[in-house]
Amino acid sequence: MENFTPVSASVGGALVGLSAGLLFVLIGRVAGISGILGGVLKPSAGDVAWRLFFLAGLLLGALGYSAATGRPIPIRIDSSLAQIVLAGLLVGVGTALGGGCTSGHGVCGIARLSPRSVAATAIFMTTGFGSVFVIRHLLGG
Amino acid sequence: MAREAAALVAGIVFGLGLAISEMVNPAKVIGFLDLAGAWDPSLAFVMAVAVPVAAVAYRLMRGRAAPLWDGAFHLPARRAIDGRLLAGAAVFGIGWGMAGLCPGPAIAALVSGDGRVVAFVAAMAAGAAVVRWFGGARTPAPGSRRSDR
Image 1: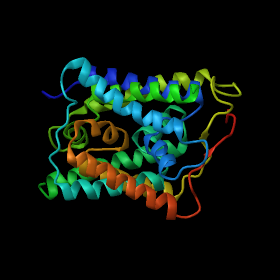
Image 2: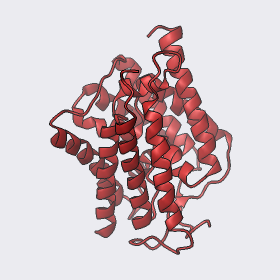
Image 3: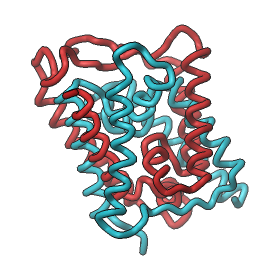
Image 4: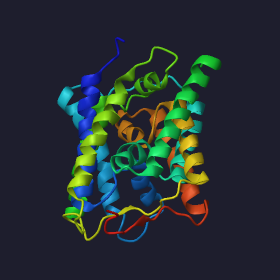
């Protein structure tokens, strides 16, 4: 368990929760990233600018981490490019169909006790575990 | 501009949280999803802390007609747990496990300049755009119900 980092994960989680709280208290929006992006991909009038500002903030926050720590954001990717592209497609299609992702369903939806979000989160956690099991332990990738 | 400022600040805080927690790190995410391997439960703490913090904010707004800087709450209008929700969530989870990236962290991770992250985000946006433009009439329009409580 050398990689176990409960403190930084909890601090990060608190910030994610705080962000979701801010967005709801101030402008009544759900901090679901796939939904925020979706409203940019298929825009409706007067409902785009705040989304772009939020997405720009995501990038600035990640840059701020690097600026504050003097280190690049921690990233290690072991998957092939083909696998990454296929995964991206599945994530895009799946979150658009399912109306949410880890943030929209997993954090905001569960915090609102939405039955839809509880169901969606149970499903994507299960297939996420299953996907890694198949790739790592059955296919040996 | 108040709406945009609120969104920008919330986005920055969100991006910081993703970087500090290492949700942005595909290897870390796959370590969390790898129950049968050297399981790293760290990322469970992200959700375990984020949910109650967000819940406090949702609770604070109970009974209010509108948020502070907007005329109405914009909560998802859908209630049904249908095949579309379940199939979508299942497909999302498969992709999440394949790459170790989900939408928020993938976008934040663009700052790494890694070409594979760019490819992931491009593919994700393409997939989502196809569903939103051609995936049937049921676009997930955010309902402008004032409050459901």
